[in-house]
Length: 271
Image (cartoon, rainbow, N blue to C red; front, side, top):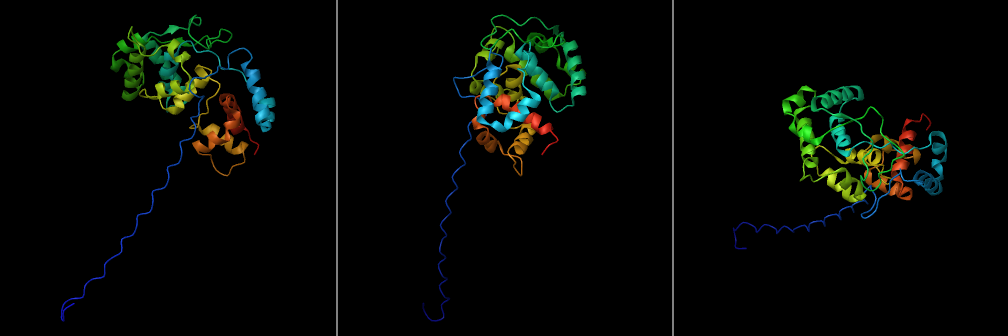
C-alpha cells in the first residue's frame, strides 16, 4: 500500500454453512397398513388377539389375567358417534352428556334401531350398543338453525363442526356413509376422517377403536396409553409418538387390544 494509505482490511474467511440435519424419518402410522384391517368383533378375533399379545409380550400376562378384554359394543351409526365425539370434546363427562342430550332433543334424534343389515365389512350382529343410545339424522342436524344448536350449549365452533359433518353424510351426494367408512382400510379411514373439521387424530383413533372395533390402532396422543406404556416398559419419561410406535411394533396387528391393557396399567397403583 502507498505511504499514508489506510491498511487494507483483512479479508474475512467465510464460514462454510453447517449441513442441515437429516430429517427424522416419519414413524410408521399408528394404524394398520393400507389394504388391510381387522375387526375385534369377528368370531375368534379376541382369542387370537390375546394369544398373539401374550406370545409377543409375556409381561402383559398379569394385566390380561386381572382385567380380560371384551370387544367394544356396536354403535348404531357412524354419524352419531362422530357427532357425539365433537360435542364431548374438552368437556367433563356429566356436562357433555347433558349438552348432548339437549342436542339430540333439538334435532329430533331417534331411539336406537337394530343394527342395519348390509352395513359393510365388520358389521357383526353379536354385540350391540346400549339401548339408551339415540341415533342422529344428518339431514335433521343440517336443517337445524345454528342458534338452536347454540342454545343446547354448543359453542359456535362446535355447532359449525357438527353441521359440516352432517353435510358430509346428508343427501344423495353424501361423501361419507356407514357402509363406506366400515369398508375402508385403517390408513384410508384415518386420513379421510382427520381431514374433516373438528376431528383430530385422537378423536379419530377413539372412533376407530370403540365404534368400528378396529384391531390395530395405537392412539399415540392418548395420555393414558402413554402413561401405561411408560410404566409397562419402565421408562423414566412419557414416550414420544415415534417411541410408542417402535415399542408397540410386536403388538401389531392387535395394538388396539394392547392399548386397552395400557389404560389398565395406567390406572394400576403398582409401579
